[in-house]
Image (cartoon, rainbow, N blue to C red; front, top):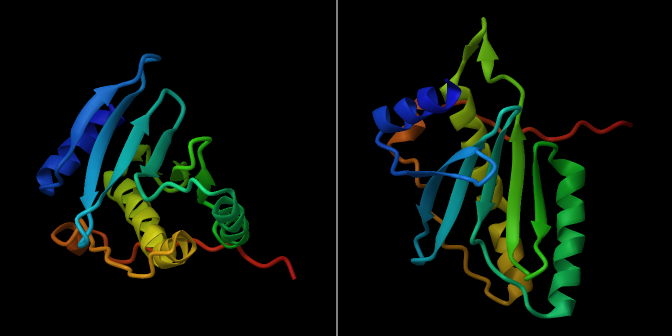
Length: 168
């Protein structure tokens, strides 16, 4: 199945991961991303019966309402630019990013794990791109993120972030 194909792909490319399952039966991979400043964000790649979802969390938490409002403004701007990943604040103030990997994962009837990894890389690239803006709202101006996929990048050249097309 697709889950096992992706698991083999991760192992073959020396990606560190753990795996688990949700109560409803969905299986997932947890892929930690250690940043240069020592903090860690987590990626979950969740395989359900109908789709594959990528969640990125552990970015930061906002407690102050004024900062949450600024985040909502930033996230609305991002939603207008990017179609496959969504930034949102959980009720506890955690910043999360979510994307549904639905396009381009099957070619000639075969699941393409490299395409899924390209989608994941695009999500991490997006977080890296806007991290400084999020930290500026948080009052922490330094951007200290490092790529977790240094060795894997050779496999995923050409993964690009999909921007929404302007309707004008």
